[in-house]
Image (cartoon, rainbow, N blue to C red; front, side):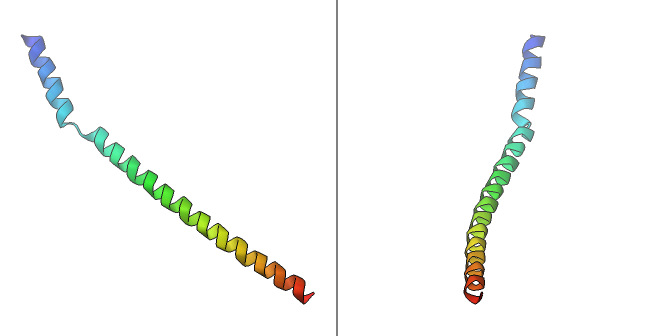
Length: 63
């Protein structure tokens, strides 16, 4: 009987303990932020390449 009470106590504690769920939520939020940052960095890189290509073309025309 005592083992059953201890086992039930552990089950109730495990159901009330939500630290693991919080860590998963923070991990999902962090991964979403990384995806958004990588997307923004990709767009910035494309516009930067276009800008420097334009500058190189103007320099070639001027010389």
